[in-house]
Image (cartoon, rainbow, N blue to C red; front, side, top):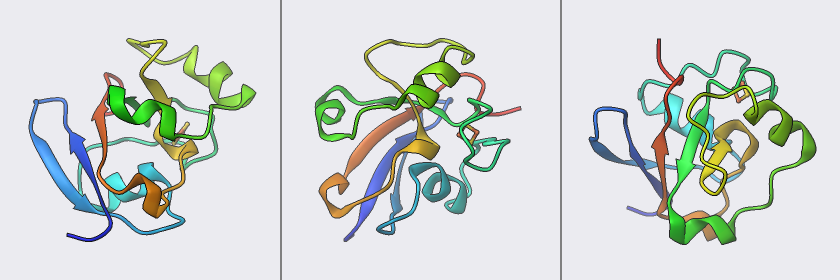
Length: 108
Ligand code: FES
């Protein structure tokens, strides 16, 4: 597969799903039919798109801005090193194979 990311759901199942440049990671996960609430639609005001980024990928992402950090304070099960809001990460080819795990609070 060309552009793609790898997502582990809350049941521990791993899915390799196609990705499109310029899409938010949240949109890519949702478009693949995986359970992610993303209640605010990507406006950085719900934290229901919370994911844990695999250790090897953390340094390759643009850092979280202040709004994202503030919103992450509201999320469940935050891991300071791994937690990000997936609506605040845009997919680029440099992120091909990005591995994330859906966090608690992302599904009903
Ligand atoms: Fe609401 Fe990401 S979709 S903060």
